Each structure stands twice: as C-alpha cells, then as structure tokens.
Length: 198
Image 1 (cartoon, rainbow, N blue to C red):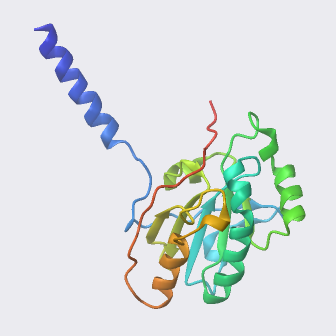
Image 2 (cartoon, rainbow, N blue to C red):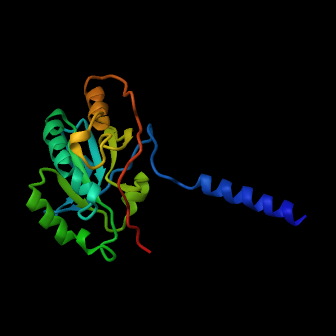
Image 3 (tube, rainbow, N blue to C red):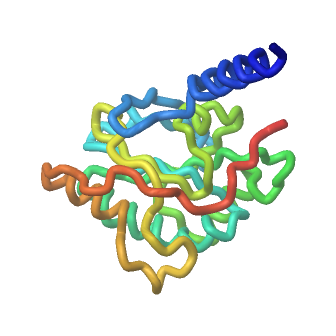
C-alpha cells in the first residue's frame, strides 16, 4: 500500500512540475515590459516605433560567456537595427550576490565597450522569468507582434568567435527579413546560469 501511495505522489509531483510555467516557447506572444536603461530612462518594446521585431538578449557584466559575446552583440545591433531588428539587452542577475552586475557597473561596462544598444536591468527578475531565460547569454527573437520566433544561442561557438561555423541568430533574422521560414527555431543556450535571488 505504501508503495502505491509513493508512486501516486511521485506522479502527481511530476505532473505539477511539468505544468509550471517554464517561459515562452516558439510561437508564444511575449508581454511587453518596461525596464530601466543605462541612461536612467525606462524602455519598453513599444517605444521602438519603426521596429519590425526585436533581438532580446539576457546577458550581464561578469559572465565570461557574456563577455566573449559582447563584440558579437554590438555587431548584431549595428547590422540588424537598420533592418528593423534592434538588440535589447537585459541583465537579470541578482546584483546583491553579484555586485559586478550592478546598475552602476552596467553603465561602466557599456561605456568601456561603447554599447550601441539598450542595456536594461531586470531588478525584480520578473521579465527573465516570464521569458524563461536560464543563461547569460540567452537569446529570444520576436517579430513586430512580439511573437517568439527563435530561442537559444547566438551561434555555435560559445566563447571563441573564431570558431563560429553556424550563426543561428543571424540565420533566423535573415529568414524573417526575407519572409522565409526559420530552419532552426531553437538551439541550446550556452553560458552562465542566471543568478536568481534567494
């Protein structure tokens, strides 16, 4: 009898965990958000009047994977903003546990690297949770109606840009720009785990 009860409880627990919100999937419509940018102004996606979509990237200052991708993110914004797909970077980390990711340090890092994109802080971590972001960096491509079109990695070389052989993110956006179907709508994000508040 005890074994039957145990199995029943295990099945119920597994079903409950499976039902939990794990964030957006490809095809879902994302909710807009309003977060503080490094210029101290609040930014939401609706502010981008000419945008045809968005490259939302969860990233941070301290993670070596994020640092290794900074130049790529700068280049992505430069290339795709003019095509209607700006980068909107979001730092979701707990800044108490990781002071390197504080808002003031975000400003310093952005100035050092000449970030050409919005770099927002998700102080409550609610946006990261809604998206289902788990890594830094973690990419979500949205169309103009905020429908999720791609989730995952920037490319297949997490740290060493010289080893890139497949540009997942660029391929996805190029397909959207050309009105074609995206071959790979999801890949595995590789990076540091998001530092959640306790």
